[in-house]
Length: 172
Image (cartoon, rainbow, N blue to C red; front, side):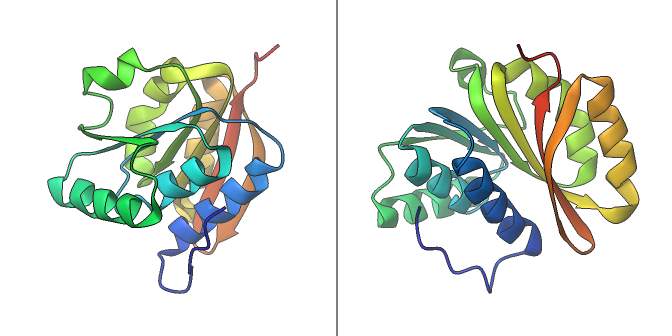
């Protein structure tokens, strides 16, 4: 895994890095999608851990530029496809599905909006890593994902933020 300094990161990003480390010991993720990639640090770490292909999407050109610079500095640009997309709107996201891991470090409102998309694009044995959930929205988010057939396999808290790793409950 890349050595990433976490002291200056938002608590949800640091929590996602911890979740990726936890998941690295339990799963193989050859294809990863990150929705809302920001500066690309989570995509870079996923690419480094699993040596697989990553699709990193963001609506903001500045975020994609920052991601490109970060990935190039880490020597990971060939493993990561950067896409401009408002959520799942870019057709290339659909074309490369299903994904073994989907990462969404976004506010809870977007976790609600994207929940059915996450499920649709996730491989049957895949994992979903979501963060950016404030304490007061946690139960609502958990109930929504349970209604969609997800179960929580790991939780992290960086008060007042919550991070969840989920799998679809009907995985055989």
